Length: 113
Length: 116
Image (cartoon, rainbow over all chains, first blue to last red; front, top):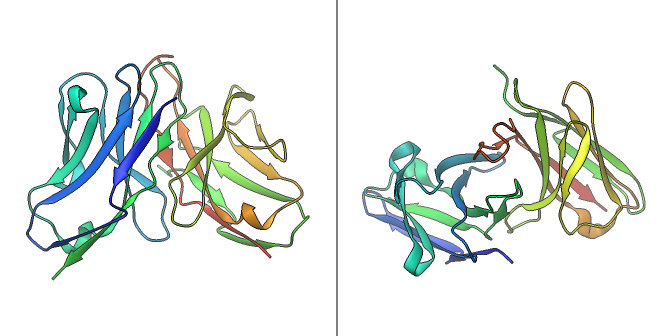
């Protein structure tokens, strides 16, 4: 069965510092992988997705993620944090055959001034 | 172009009651998926509707049922509400073509259900 593990339910970084949110997946075959962001009292917005093309995926708002099959990881990074990046981030996986998306428990990103 | 819309925004119900939540997909989308997001958790897949039929279902009891209408809008019904049903219910729409494509799911703002 597929699953997604996000390391760290809360991550704090200083404004201007590197953002690194960790995600590991378990799947017998490379799945489709996603990162979503959720701002307070809002729905989810897709940041980026991996679909077996390039392993380094660039998304919106300066975020990017690298698919590493050997490590079964799909960590999200951003070179320089901005106050507006404070939100909940969800890593998610979807098998090729199905449209069901399985989400991790989320990581709340706090930006320190 | 309106995105995914959901109604109502908030809802308070009593244990044992029934509730209906509504979702209108993004223009051009034909598939609707429903998710339950408990406080402090990631969304969990409830079910998906395509061509007015339930296409897939997650691990939710039969108290959770749904419907899709010819205009692709959808309803989520929950019977015999339990306190544990309190959550944010998210609707996501997508366009299912090609069938094995990686079509993006667009999420609505959700309906916050509180069961007392």
